[in-house]
Length: 159
Image 1 (cartoon, rainbow, N blue to C red):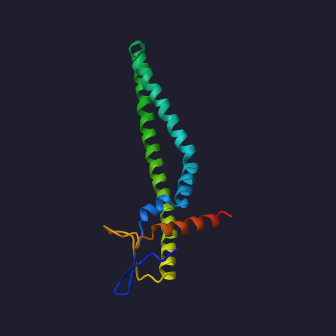
Image 2: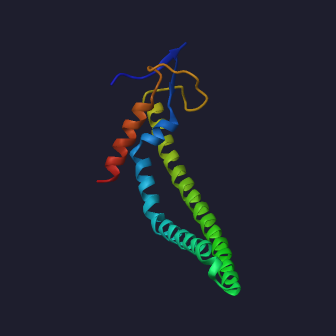
């Protein structure tokens, strides 16, 4: 494969679309699947509790007029209590999920950075940019090369 670079007065500049690299890398897909497995049970429990709450709310709406005042009051308290617990559980779930996603994304970012550094050193680039680039020619775009390296790295890690 020909060297992808732009020379300006002897300087070699490359550009990498880090967002595209992250989204298209097999490591990203693996990260998503791993997080899904990790949080699947909690998500299922949360949905079950949401369904239980919905059924109680429907029961109150449907049967509230024929229930005693004490039964209505007890059911309303149960609904409020479950709603508070559900909100707290949902908030905790989202916070934990975001924390884990950020941890995994930071690991992925380090891997991408290592690959970009390797390409930069091997091909003697002076600068490789990842953000703030409005336009880059195909000659300067290293995104596909970085993706190829990430795919190779992923395959070798799965052996």
